[in-house]
Length: 294
Image (cartoon, rainbow, N blue to C red; front, side, top):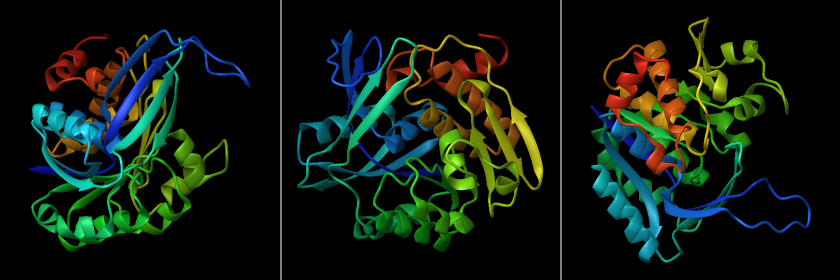
């Protein structure tokens, strides 16, 4: 069963800093590292390492960074559908402090258009599940949803980054996976979110809560999913790991609560390692972790 992911594809530069910048402060980084990335890109690698058959649709520039992105996807065993653009390949700067927290700034660069999505329609026809984020322009996002409806592909929406227009598409979503901040924006205010509002959403929802796990809301039920205790080294990409792993387990016909527990366990493993792609665990590691407290 196939997973289709449509998202951002670019290069990420990681800087390890002692703390985040204060006003007018210059910092010396402790370490520098670069690798391909983007939310959809990371999710594709996470899902593939859990054993899913993954096709990734994205856009890159006609440059060395774009070639690097494609090469890594192929190495991971992912089928890349990369549209070449005149713009530079997307770029992200990621600062990580000594506590493992991070700050991310993204330059979108080459992006998908609605026509690009229409040109890739054949991949929607053969997909069983679509994992989508609004890191692509709304017109491309809307076209991806239209095609998922046309071919009855289950839509998993990770609403990161959050935009108000996301609300318009919730009736078409099979599963919504916001983090705490995105849940506040969708179902509450700036700092809180309403469980009652989540329960009344037109789709099943998993709110991810970082080190405390997640909460699944489905058919009126509320299921708390705890996370194992770990020493976090770098939290960058943990949400991407969760979403990719979640879809991979669902495509194995694993029940949603168990798939969510396995995805939380995968994300917990990922934060014990630095960077993103190198931190994403393989299925065997998650299976081993299931029988240990790690």
